[in-house]
Amino acid sequence: MTLTHAPKITTDGDRSIGSRIAAYRTAQRLSQTALGQALGVTFQQVQKYEKGRNRVGAARLQAIADFLGVSVSTFFDDPGENADGKETIQNLLQDPHVMELVQTFATISDKVTRRSVLSIVKAAASLQGVSSDAQN
Image (tube, rainbow, N blue to C red; front, side):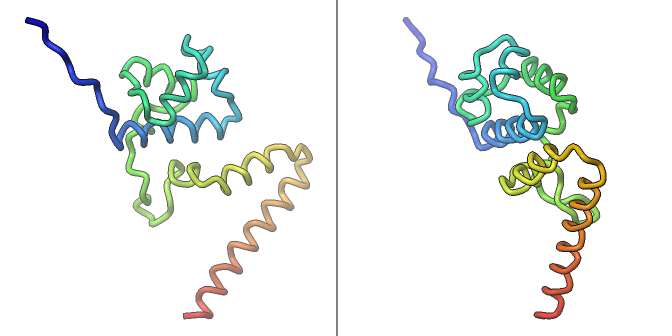
């Protein structure tokens, strides 16, 4: 008698972990190839992990966390808000506009210019708060 096993079906949890891996890899400006080489797998395998098509085993997840310089729990934390009501870094890193801002900001080498850009962003955020308060 031959037993057949149903294929393992990936879950929302697998996709969530994969998207967090992608967000942290992208935030560090690493390619899928670089992560794959560090893990001893192909970039196609990294793609499958990040899309949630393949599950990431415990040892492999630890290796990914080590390579990215984060704790394994980073991939499991609730992506909602912190106790202070602010969005968590995982949630922010999943926003493509945030990633674009971070990547573009990282290309500015002049410290004075970086501080100026940061001041502009802070001022815009401050005005956004005033604008929404005035509408209420």
